[in-house]
Length: 299
Image (cartoon, rainbow, N blue to C red; front, side, top):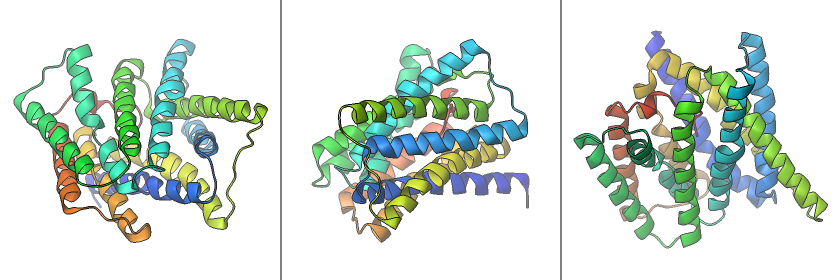
């Protein structure tokens, strides 16, 4: 098996793992788990697994100054994005949330043009218009809650800011080390939120079923730690641009699993809108944007 084919398999597995997170998130919420508990379990377990991988590979930690900058990304950006994402799942279908989250490459292109002075070429401009048009079709083609749509788009906006900041903060750093720091700092913040809620008399809500517990474990182990490791393993063999294109499998997996396991259905207009959004993301990836060449941590 060629190295590029192995890379493609890793990226596909990563996209499938990330894409299934919405399904496990819905099941965890249905089992009574609150969002702070889900995120604390997700980032805490993922940080431990990634730290073990980092130690096994002998990857050094960055300097304290670099660690602080990366930790800020996790504590603010990744936590904010994750909260919006998991809260959105409570107010909109999982497939729609996944499609709207994948607007982040379009937002990254805009932020890069404004703050990093990158030029928006013709292909990028057309892709941005397609992304906005696709979003309009996704939002306008159904009867979902506006709050769910807003939270999903908010997650995409926060994630795009996180990536743009990460271009500077993570330059020259090992991806696994960055992911470990990001997840660890996110776990600290989520743990603090759980602690504050506990002090206020709001105990953490744990699953009331075996499926809920399995979903919680899957979110942390499969959809976060494994997905991140597989992503970077694939990108090292495939290259950033091809990885970005292959990663568009993620919302497709979410929509497919949501249709199969959650009995969700996209309207014809929403399906067209979703296809347009994914096409726009692929066009952005193929336009070789420098920001896309250095992803800090996958979704």
